Length: 316
Image (cartoon, rainbow, N blue to C red; front, side, top):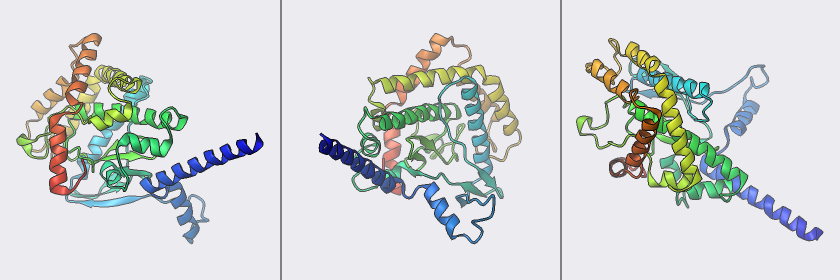
């Protein structure tokens, strides 16, 4: 009995080591480990308050629009928190150094879906979760899947209300806890790659693979996603005036590409219209279900992903 117990313990430990290696293979060295390693190498590592931040420089983009978008996302986060909704979003720091350059805080312990899909042995998001966190009934898998669902709900709502486009898999990240994180907000509130000929017509990105990672369209996980989206929509609807006021203030004589030389009154009208303030709670549920059905496996989303694959080598 004792030998059997030890053998089982060793087997469990070996599985955990394998999963840790799989996570490191997907995401690389953890930021905590890298930070400690660099602190040990730094001649100032012993100084109280020493820290290191990962950042990148960017040019030929108006970072001020990115800052504005992240301010809106922070407002969304505040609304969800006030409503006690477990909807997850990520705000990262940006410093606009000019009208076309800036410094962006990079997301640590994360990889783009494009990068993940290019890893050897990649099969699907669900397979990645099972390989990294264990079988679907294991606590680690359930926790990671929960984080995934909560973040998917958050970014579905953000993408719909702000009309965020250019949602190829190079602009969508996955962190080592299971969260989806969208980045690069160069196209929103009516502007999109291709202009009026844009093929991104879905309310938000919700591929068949993304739904499969929730457990499939008939699963409890997907039902939780629908519930969070609906409750989040209602919370945002109640704060429609505050959000519209914020956008209106920023739109006034704005140099941001989403507003510059545009009909800002029409942009604001369409933004307010997406809150559907005239709908009852029951009607909001129906509307959210419609948005999800329209987005799930949407043909235009697949076409845009294929376009990015052909032109830029980004995996769909």
